[in-house]
Length: 353
Ligand SMILES: NC(=O)c1ccc[n+]([C@@H]2O[C@H](COP(=O)([O-])OP(=O)(O)OC[C@H]3O[C@@H](n4cnc5c(N)ncnc54)[C@H](OP(=O)(O)O)[C@@H]3O)[C@@H](O)[C@H]2O)c1
Image 1: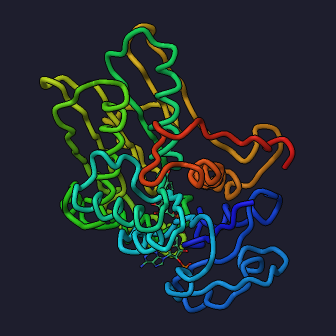
Image 2: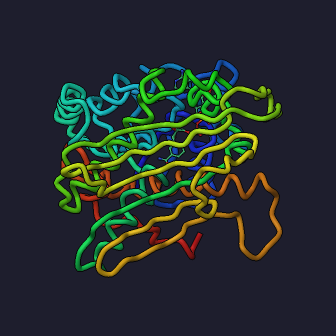
Image 3: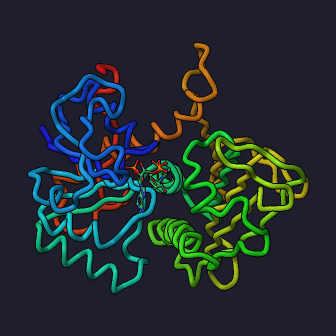
């Protein structure tokens, strides 16, 4: 039984909590760090619509650090390295959807700080999820097991964010609704952070598959809305950013070998000049043999479900990739655990739940 603390109880964190409360005999929820005063002191069960469990959420970081636990599930909207280092130094492992996907290519000073915290606490840290995570890490590596030679790997993500209820991420962080000319890989701290995460994923694939990349470039084309769109409590005004086409490209001798491309819209106006893969994620490996796989998650392929449920399914997938890794992260050697170093993460009790 592993004792876990939820740090951030938003869209992804809540899915982890309900999964634990609804039937994970291997995991015990012993605390939660929240940000809003409204959630401070709330019972963790009631916070996610379940029966009370007698454990209360807190905004107090020191209280979380002092809580005895094996692992912190770190899912805040914005990742803070200081917090993660404090958790690791306190002796708790960290499994996160937010960052630390490929430490080899992260800022060396930051990497050293994380490693020092792991040494102090005898702890390990793992970043994963859906993308970045399974689809940009685990799945390509798994497919490479069937390959003789790879010439190029491309992962395309096509998604309309209109139905994504984390509007803090859509508007505040990702700057949809901002002027088109304000969108660049470095124009805000968050866009730079987000771009660095996908850049890291390209490096991850290049490093894991022996591509010997020289560099990874990042570009974005922002596209303006033709008309106004009401997105939950936000008005996306005509003329502001409603589309972002990002490309992170890993090059060797100027030749693109690894590419992650995202085709993101809000308001569902799809620019005519953009590539048109199917909605979801398309992974294409050109090589011997050439392979292609398409991933799409839904609440169900057989029963009727609301749009809200279908949308949530991607959060479930993100959350479970990390929740199912808790045991492996807790058993991993001190330091970084990545999708390339951990054993295959799978849900051994999936049918029993
Ligand atoms: N790897 C992947 O595939 C993947 C996919 C989706 C999301 N993610 C990442 O997973 C994380 C969680 O996503 P989400 O959709 O659950 O986000 P979210 O619902 O928008 O936010 C999560 C929580 O962040 C908290 N928060 C408020 N102010 C904050 C601040 N200043 N700094 C940090 N956190 C603050 C909020 O806490 P309160 O509710 O207590 O106010 C909120 O519940 C994000 O880092 C996101 O980028 C990764």
